[in-house]
Amino acid sequence: MTARLGEPEELPINEDNDVVRVRQLVRTYAQQAKLSLVDQTKLVTATSELARNTLVYGGGGTALIAPVDDGRRLGVRAVFTDEGPGIPDLDLALADGWSSGKGLGLGLSGARRLVDDFTLDTEVGRGTTVTVVKWAR
Amino acid sequence: MERVPILKIGDVLLVSIQIDLQDQGVLALQEDLAERISTTGAYGVIIDISAVDIVDSFIGRMFATIASISKLFDADTVVVGMRPAVAITLVELGLTLGDVRTALDLDRGMKILRVLGKQRRGSFAVTDDFAAEEVL
Image (cartoon, rainbow over all chains, first blue to last red):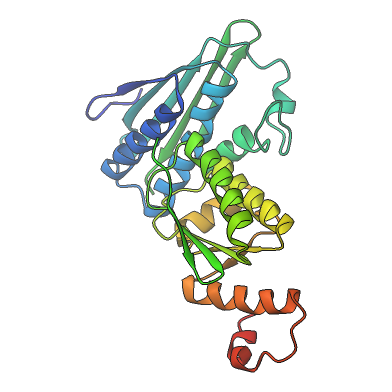
């Protein structure tokens, strides 16, 4: 459906510093898509939360960052994939303030509020994929 | 891993975050600060985030943790210089910074710390900081 501008780029998420690299790459794509400064900040913050989830809860994985174009506007899509334990109770995981680990419980629910599209695909024992899109206004 | 330098100005410790902090760096900064407050007896900590372009839940929690730790040493923490885009994002993310005080800039942050420090030590005359009281 969506035509791509430029090339998607995949980054591994296996260590702390990879989260920083994801933030920096997403920032670059967001600037290219001409997102406003506030929208750039929201998207980078959301992807920082999701990249950390992939590392901490998913046991590592990948981030695929791509420019998107729906014919009317440009945007950035980020897909986080891990082959970790999956999320047994999605409603709970998406609730504010709930955390299974060392976070504040704002990672998933907060990230969802900061982006335009948010889809989550998870299966216990198989892993989790989270896709987010932020569009330029 | 890069470390964030901690500067001492009078009785205040100043931390200016100028790099894109990774999580280990955040934890190291907490430990370094606790150590410095305890050895210097500083009554205040200022964290300058004017160069920080995102604050996510991990970094936000660091501010709250540093504030709690510094309280145990009878010191106050003020976060200064938050960018407007960061403030908007924090509110939407749903992150509250707990007991952390914030101030527009370094100057106001220093004034708040001076007044708070004197109040907590129960000193009498605070005439030279009269103007600062208006900031509070």
